[in-house]
Length: 318
Image (cartoon, rainbow, N blue to C red; front, side):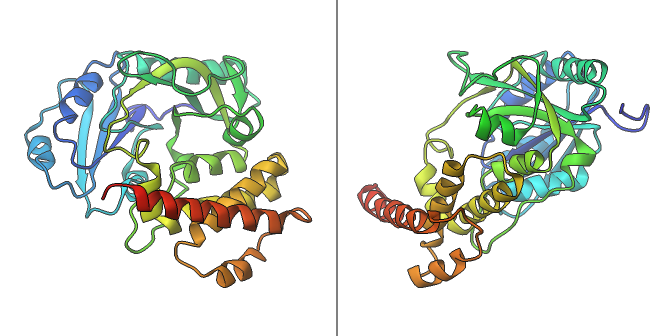
């Protein structure tokens, strides 16, 4: 499947941003430098309170691409994704955080590998390309490279079977990825991004995995990666929802190891206990068709993890 000529750009490059006015120039410079210019840049400002809006209103794109900017009330990055899925016009959808950058040939390489996949794996019905991320300063690869490159697989097989973890970047057919949505919970502003990407795998959408760096990341002191416990503890329903999805879909899927299922169940218990009593969690746990004998162990691990969180949060500076 190829993009419709003269109707839609090849890519939608989606940038969710919140209070990153000081970093947007660096990101936009990397986007302006792309050697492949048939794309739209779609920015969703998640209710920033700094100079983000002033900067974006004054910004003039330097290139052949188009720019569209949307603003929403501060609801979280995942809700910005939902808006982007509704608005995206590109054939392929890729995203980059506002504190990251793209190598100049990132879109060109995504497009090369997309066409390579259609030519070399015509029966696989591949819907996207996934590449590696590297540290912005050291250029060292973040997480695990893929077992082979190129390699046809899906997100579930790559994450749970081959156990290749760490941040990755992907470009996926917009008509496929836009079928999905993140859930929203009152007074919470975070759902793990894997809630979306793992569903691609559970639905058996195939990707071409390549050991090529297509994004540079910077883990900032105020970012999610360095503050996971604080972020998770403030958004327990969103995190519990993600783990409930993993447990239910893994049991149906049949490829995820039992140990991974029990661990996700324990994490569901852990974060459910932020908002529910143990009795309520115990009753809800019966909805999971867990392997025989694993429910009790998962409950006990979850209780331990919740108590550990309580202790760690007490010791953290406010």
